[in-house]
Image 1: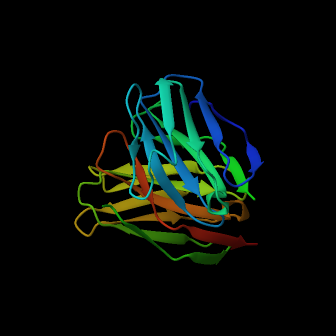
Image 2 (image 1 turned 180 degrees about the vertical axis):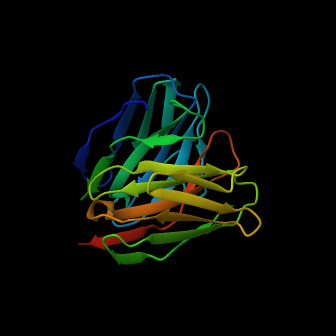
Image 3 (image 1 turned 90 degrees about the vertical axis):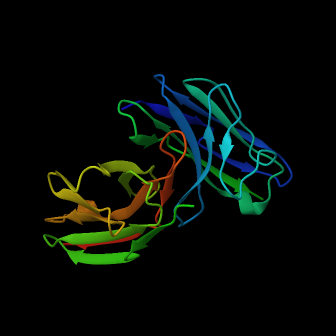
Length: 115
Length: 113
């Protein structure tokens, strides 16, 4: 399967600030997604990162709070804007289509703590 | 939208026993159902998946069954080992471009030796 990396692996941020998380894949993939996993909880889909167009957001998530970019088939960013302690979570990117369609693999995650 | 229910939330078995985790989904358009294993502090790992045109799939000690009519699918682990201890998540695809997934709440499996 594809090798997926995320930067940073963890960060501690002050409320009101923003953090941009990067996701890099070592091969071209058809789809990239962003998920959030709050402590001890399941994974929640934030959005589908569409290459060359605006991301598709799930209910409860908006572009102003979680702007997403996907400039090419191997890279995406998620920004968590105007952070509050409730944004403390693990943010994971995932990719589909490497090697098979439908199969989805996760990056190592970014552990965010907001003070 | 899609909703995935997963049971039980915790499961404790003795080494060598079988473990079964069950999930139900709500959207009849869902056509892809993966299972992930997540060890503490690590990323979710895809362990097996099934597509809606298949009723059962096996891979060594793990198997997944799907009942499309009843909209439920199950993970079966035989001959459990302590290293099977982890949180297991089921998921179902939602109807949009690509295979965005809705996850169940997870099952914490503990295998004691």
